[in-house]
Image 1 (cartoon, rainbow, N blue to C red):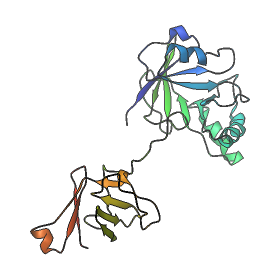
Image 2 (image 1 turned 90 degrees about the horizontal axis):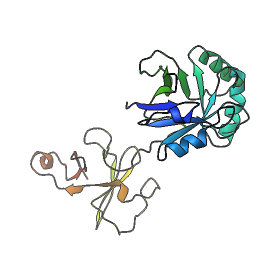
Image 3 (image 1 turned 180 degrees about the horizontal axis):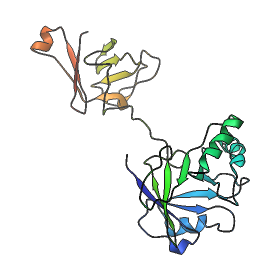
Length: 248
């Protein structure tokens, strides 16, 4: 897992350069989100709300004077209803109370930005970010490579690498051989288009889903020697270099 560094401060001028992310308040006495965004263009700035009535924040703060643990479930219900997935900032000692409040309300717990000032970079188990240092001017957090609600959701590519068939040299059936290549249906239901180059129109796969150039292996190959003797009559070479041979 690749860790990232986040800086936050009530004083924008005190924030150091070189952070992967920054954070700022949307509301309250120290509202400075817009100023942080202006000072660090091109960086992701995590928005923090101190008040439960503020909508659209990335993080809701449960420090004294801000949200209480009992404020968290209704905020989560509201924000999730609007299509957002906010996190909660909470100390290690306070977090169990947040979890209890969510459990009583029947609400799934939020991603957790933990406060655990050990003066050494670390990620508290179960947290997506951990504030581990508080200096006179700014705070420092360790952040996971993916923070739900803050980072865009990772997308699993539908193309190689890797082109995955179901076990060593096993797939369910050959769908069809066409003039431009071969369609192959794996036992997971994925349809792979082998050796086809656009602009040939994409047919519909056997699983009812269209297959397209994004599911194209590098090339088709014809088995020889031991593979041919074993009854393998065509092979797919993945763009990662892996070879998959199959009977027709």
